[in-house]
Image 1: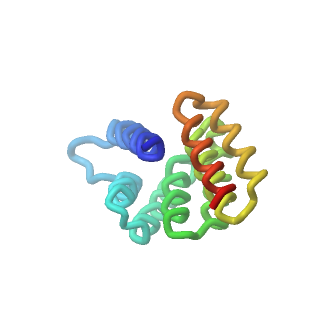
Image 2: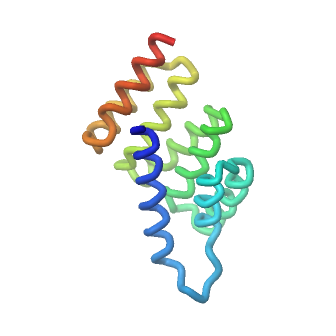
Length: 143
């Protein structure tokens, strides 16, 4: 449940912030399409639009975050970590990037490194992340 709340809140924020930059007469940009495709769980196609969004604006942390999330969902953990690293280089307060980078590290059995990312996420967004972190980290230890 917490994962859905975090994911939904991130995408709502991204959608609202991105829509504000798009005039009614303009076509939606690549990042909007990537967000939509990710919500529809078409991660492979979302990756293509993320790549295009990054070509359009390489300084947009959200493009790297969405691409990292799509790669995470496809099980491409090492590449996802690189995208989350870039997201965090561009926006050091991106709690969701820390969470999903931690999830990638957990999937790669790098538990202590994952725990560090979870702690950073919790420091940025304590109310949202506490239960999410506990649930995921404990389940990893006992699975």
